[in-house]
Length: 166
Image (tube, one colour):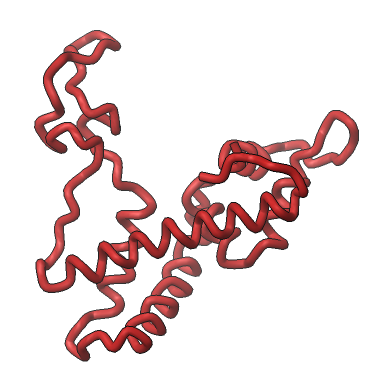
């Protein structure tokens, strides 16, 4: 619910704040929850390409601090892990089935009983990277999902009412 409200508010052409318009509430709540959380939401749910570079820089810095704290080996490429994890977090949906897990029947809006051959019925693309860094990338993807949940929870608290976080 919060994600939909945020995306709708960010795309709104009317940010008046009266008894009929209250899109600014969710924008303000996200802005007050954290700069980084707002950036995550802007890039992922509002397709804000202008903020992507800033998010990637911020995320690379976060990954590098985690690497130091977790004592990753020196040969691990932080920039590569940051880029791969952010890219995967932003869009892991299978392009063939668009996340529906089954093949589409040609020239119809219906799905077949056959699993998507590209994603093997998972609805997500396969993470392709060097096996030596795969675990690091997967851990950082989980960190991004965790950061997203935390930002949503902070925004919901700022709104002062219970809503579903992503």
